Image 1 (tube, rainbow, N blue to C red):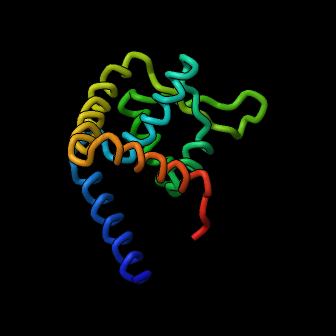
Image 2 (cartoon, rainbow, N blue to C red; image 1 turned 135 degrees about the vertical axis):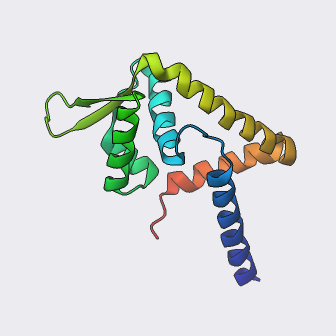
Length: 145
């Protein structure tokens, strides 16, 4: 029975991961670009600046450093993000959203929110809230694999 549950979890994870990456929810941005922009947007909503340490992006996304660097470089080239050096530690690197491009990202983000609403409509708000709690608990535990 335990084996069936583990297999079921893996199959669900693979299906959900593929669904999210293939959903075209981000259209003009890659999936990784959208993830990094979402982190910057969340910070921007908190403080009006959105300055995020690249180390925080690495920690929250679990992407490889080279992958984060490529993605940040792409977002900077497209004008979505600006790079900034750290104040006291010149080695520290930060990114922040470019205010003039936030509306462009918000249009992409709205499509993601519509997809989330579609999922809520399918599974119901109670199961959606339960899913969020499960994910938060898992992330808080920081399991080592």
